[in-house]
Image (cartoon, rainbow, N blue to C red):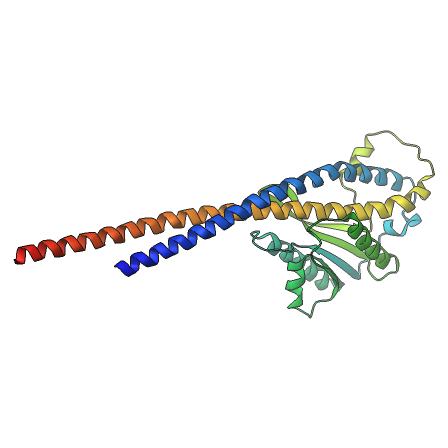
Length: 290
């Protein structure tokens, strides 16, 4: 019985240490989430305004005037997966990989060739164990500090592949930040620019703008910047969603550890009470024998 009590004490001490660790990780994630959320929210108005401008300019000129506006039949598709560089964030990375695999199998079932561009260590590790899938490029440790230059360089590479005819469409797969406890797995087209969502609906009720220089000239600057910023915005959303998911996961882990400590403490108290009762019975039995 004494050995059992020692084992329970050891387990309680171990679980308490784990609870302290998960609580500290939750606090770190909360601090990082606040900064990531500020960066993400401050960039959303610019992203929305840029989408409105591109939508307004694009509808004034034929789509053939810029190669990134022209749709074509899908034979080759690029999938860009934005996963995290670290774990301990619940189903954050698993959901992205599942969505990417679903998109990949759907395109391949339609007879299309799929190339993967992996951003984030978890996605790279997953497909490293599956060499049968075509991985075009991989980037790791990029979410410590999200840089626009990396997004612009990656967007330029993807756009050049599209222009050269090496791909017919590029799709982003990432977690869009909705709240600190909820993320939306999103699969959205990046190239060609064909669906600007609510931007076109908003413009349909607005006024007509006169641009200087003319719309065709503006597209040469606006379209590449729009593609780059869409990718940059997705990376900011992914970082905020990852910190939110990790904070929620660590909170759940801390709560589970507290419940386990309470259960182990109750079990230890019962074991101790049983040991004391046994000793009392032995003492009384010995006294009666005398």
